[in-house]
Amino acid sequence: MTKLTITKMDSILNELRNCHSLSQIAMKYNVSRGRIQQIKKANEINARCSLNGRPRKLDTRHERMVARQIVTGHAHTATEIIQTMPILNVSPRTIRRTLHRQGLTARKAMKKPLLTKRHRKNRLDFAMAHQDWVLHDWRQVIFSDETKINRYWSDGKKWNWSRGKDSYNESNISGTMKFGGGSLMAWGCITSEGPGFLTKIDVKLDSGLYCNILNDEFLQTCAYFDLDSTKVIFQQDNDPKHTSKKVKKWLSDHNINVLQWPSQSPDLNPIEHIWVLLKRKLNMYENPPSGMLELWERVSNEWEAITKEDCLNVIDSMPSRIQSVLQAKGSYTKY
Image 1 (tube, helix red, strand yellow):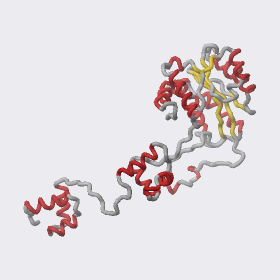
Image 2 (cartoon, rainbow, N blue to C red; image 1 turned 90 degrees about the vertical axis):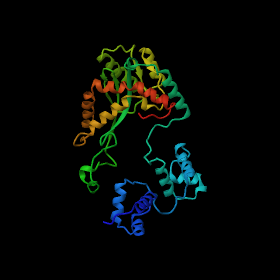
Image 3 (tube, rainbow, N blue to C red; image 1 turned 30 degrees about the horizontal axis):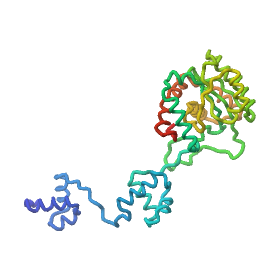
Image 4 (cartoon, rainbow, N blue to C red; image 1 turned 60 degrees about the horizontal axis):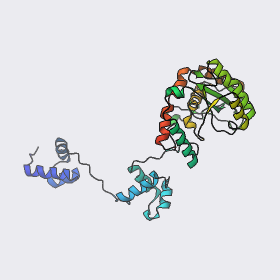
């Protein structure tokens, strides 16, 4: 191996640091490409060299402007950015690459209840009024809600791991039916002592039927857990059936303290997570129920299997939910 002079070695090192190619350096100094590679490795030269090719159509300033369109909500897609900024004169593909370089990633939009300015104000007012409530306060609340339970895949999702070629195996398919699948409605409530009584709603829910549910399942829940119904705090959403004159009269006649609840706020109601837990358990059965009677039997069994700890876990998240609403200024939260 020919020994390189100090002058030639310095020149080669300088060429490497300036990101010249190994082949060009080897040809220039009449040295093998492998030798140049050894020199580069021995001297730990790891310069990040820009690749040759066409220069970017957008400079740094314009790339920041593109990203700002997404961040500020003025545009939601690459096509919308081109429409709002025709001066750029680039393709949607260029815009997408630019957004990726700016640290933005395309994701499926999350479905959340629509929040108007009034909804945000009411949510923020509610959070400010209850920001000093501690766990003991929230554990006095009985949270209630209705939910729809489908016969097939109750929560609408079935997850599985598979290789690409196995995607259409029977075990990786969630079957659907255009007609005849069926579903049922249920009303339930949760307390800090555990889940309350659950009831199936067989007909259209109106204020009269809702009063019957309160008179039966709600009061039975209080009695079962030895709770004074006049001292607990009852939570319900602002469905017109819940806020009708007939229901308000029933609540007043029974001295029920009702928590004033902001509209469009399922993210604040911890029972939503109990519904998710229930439906996840229903999806763990190997076969779907043969009919609605078997579906209700499974629902009842899984509801009774929900523990006090399950209820406390979600109820005790209320202070965190309130803080999330405050930080979001009444807007959407992670819940």
